[in-house]
Image 1 (cartoon, rainbow, N blue to C red):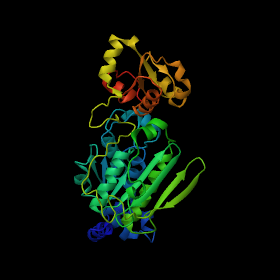
Image 2: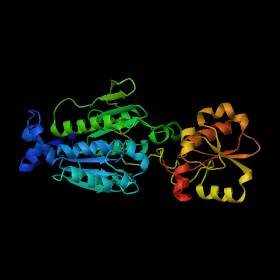
Image 3: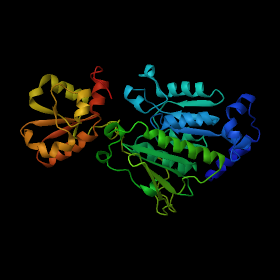
Image 4: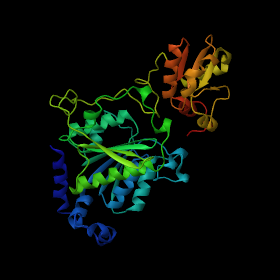
Length: 395
């Protein structure tokens, strides 16, 4: 079934949908638009949209879809609210820190618009569950922050013929597009995910707080246009935004006949979880540490029993070190490490850590190339705070 047929099904349903007097008042500014009018508002009331990720992008997307009158909104996330989220995740408030994101999101969206239905999917999106979750929705909006979920959602949407509204952010830059089976998919641009050590995300590199509002607003706009079947969507175009120069550019996206999932001879016919992790996850394969990694429990034992036998090296930035650190750690930011290698004793093993375990893996690779014995703390400071020392500040 082509993606447009999903929208046509919505149209068929909306013929029997009526607006209440309160809804007519609430959406009156929409009703005044000839491109929307009563018929379009009925389409939105009949529409079902899944927002995957209730973080920086998912927050503005969900808020605008709820305010606009999308009848059923699904929110998929598995995380709790942290204080550092509040700089950009505008669904939440300070008193909700430590609570479930999806539960807080539902409360906020229902308070904003009691005319809509909000469904909770409090789970990590995986190959085992994604098709079951997305099957009841007309449009899937990507608010995730990692490549594993991005590729999985793309493939699931191609296989189920559902439109996929893509967005991503990094520091001061953002991207957005709309992918459908006919117009190509995310893999047509990026066939394979990058190596884990080469892909720091906002958790590692930072992000301007308002940036997800810009990109999330674009995603919400494209979603409404898909539901309403109006205007020119971003199908076939990758929109690029640079907040520092306040410049929008776009790149034409063509369907790749050789694409492994949407091409003429697709080889991806079954969903699998990419062995790629985001910067908030432990970079492990199936939960198994590599020979270049050390777990939290083992490091705790070594710090207790033989701290003099190794050097604990912190490769985060000085600003991160001020937030929290191991008292015994030596701070050498990753960007300075190659030039400061002589400061490290080659006769001692080095245990490297960062925030989540990605930069430390890159540091281990560099150290080993220069003859040092080194391992990376799997999960970094985040894992240590979760598993060993809950008093350590998380950010």
